[in-house]
Every structure is written in C-alpha cells, then in structure tokens.
Length: 363
Figure 1 (cartoon, rainbow, N blue to C red):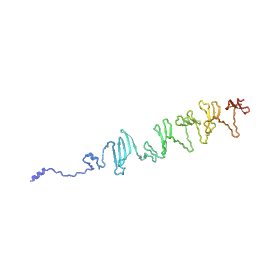
Figure 2 (cartoon, rainbow, N blue to C red):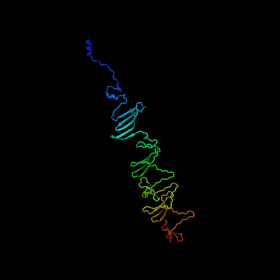
Figure 3 (spheres, rainbow, N blue to C red):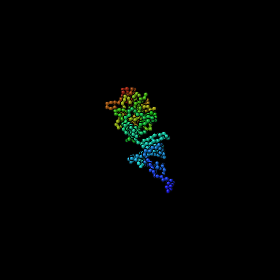
C-alpha cells in the first residue's frame, strides 16, 4: 500500500503554487488589448520622463505645454511648425483662440528673421512701445520717448533718399524732409492746403550763401513751372527779383488802403525787352481801369507821358503857390502838340522866356 502511494506521488503532475507579482512603477494603463503603442499613447501617470532626441512630425506639427493649475485661459502655450515657419502662440482652454507671440522664418537651413507680436522687456527698457526714457522699438517701427534730448547730432544715412517724416496724430498729412540723389535738401507738407511757417522772437529768417562769388537766393516754382522766379542778393549787397521765365511778370500788391513805399537815392526802371519800342514803361491803373496811363522812355532816350485812354486828360498840377517848371537848355525850344484838327501845333518859349502857341513852328 505504501508503494502505491509513493508511486502515485511520483507520477502525479506538479502543482504550481500562486506567487505575488511586484507592482510596476510608473504604472501604464492599457486601453484594451491593442498593444504597447496604444498603451504609451494613453499613459496617464508618467512623472519627469527622460527622452533622447524626440521627433514630432506630421502636417503642421505642434506641441502644447499645459499648466493644469493655471487660471482659466492662462495655462496653454503652443509651439508650431507651419511650412517652415516656427512660432509660439498663446491658446485658450477651448483651443478656439490662438494668438501669435513669436514667428521665425527661414530660407532653407538659414534663418531669415523673427518677429515678436508683443513688446519685449529687457533690463534696459521695453522695446516695441513708447515709454519714458530713451527707448527704441522693434524694427521697422522705432519709437523715442517724449522730449528726448540728443547730445551731439543725428545722422540719417545708408539710403539713396534718407527721409525724416513728422506725423501729428491730429493731422491727415505727414511733413517730410529728405535729400535727393542730386544732394538737394527737400521739404514737403504733402498737402495742397498746408503751409510751412517759420517763427522767430525778434529774429529773422536768413539764407546764407557760403560759396565763392555766390548769392543768397530763394527760388519759387509755380505749379507746373520748370523755371523759377527768384529773389536774391549779390555779392555787392544788391537785392534782385526776377520772374525767371520769358515774358514773365513781377507783381507787388498791397491790400485795402495800404501802399507800397520804395526808399533809396534812385528808383530805376530798366527796359530789357529785346526789340521793344517803348523801352522802360511805368504803367498806372486807376480804380476799375483796364488800360493804364503810362510814363516811359523810348529807345532814343525820349520821355513820354500818356493817358492811353480815349478822352482822358494828362494833368500836371502844382499845389498852393507852387508852379510847374518846364525847362529846356535850348532857347526857343518847342513842344509839339497834336489836336483832333489837322496839322501840328506847338507851344514855344521866346527869348524872354514867355510861352506862345504856333500852328507852324517856333521862331
């Protein structure tokens, strides 16, 4: 009997005793029998993992960094690669609002630039917005704080047409100062109704010519004109005005009852017209008159006074006890006159200095 029991013990299959399995830490929660890849995709309790050279790929790949303890709409930041443009954005909790903070572009493997959409704070100040202090903004919009004092000078260079633009928040048009390719300085209000105004306190607006044998000159161009009217002073101190263009006129106006006063030892009028028959002419227009009375000297040095208008008079008057003196160095000089009737008439001076009239000639 003992032998049977022993034999049965030797022939019976071995019974495996159950043993405890150690718990894995960190745990991985499996989402059904779908394999290790699915398990890793749904892992929920990984703490401070270490990864070497991870790659995130796909159409417009992005990585979100989420702070689960942040207040509403403050916890999610997103890094994005969109067709080669690398960006950082602030994203709300619903992921319905995405606002760019940084955007960097590239040309092949060479970065071409980065743009911040918000002001940048540094230990030396804030870039991107006007504040107090001497502060610059982000290119191309550079800002200076109000009432900045610059010691020394400011140079605008490295441009074919360096320009300074002034733009008031209350005006529609900017005012610009620039240098053209010819080296000329230019000013423009960029408006048909704006003006340049110069103010001094008991001072003056001065134009200085520092060249050799030059002249201080102001050139004025009318709309569409290519030849300027000019006002200038020569090296001898003489003042000149010229219309510039051929057959151009120079007009000086006074308003209301105002007048025009000329002071000097001589007031000269020079006839410069080529081939002119009247020479230098001084015209006078009475109120409402379209034709002038004139005083002129012809090309032969003869002097003329003419009313120029039909039935008008020429009056020479002396006030009070004064008199009109007509003198000629030639005795028996004659002053021919014309009348509506035929023939010439003369006013003559005899040897005694008396005037008489002659219908033929003076004796």
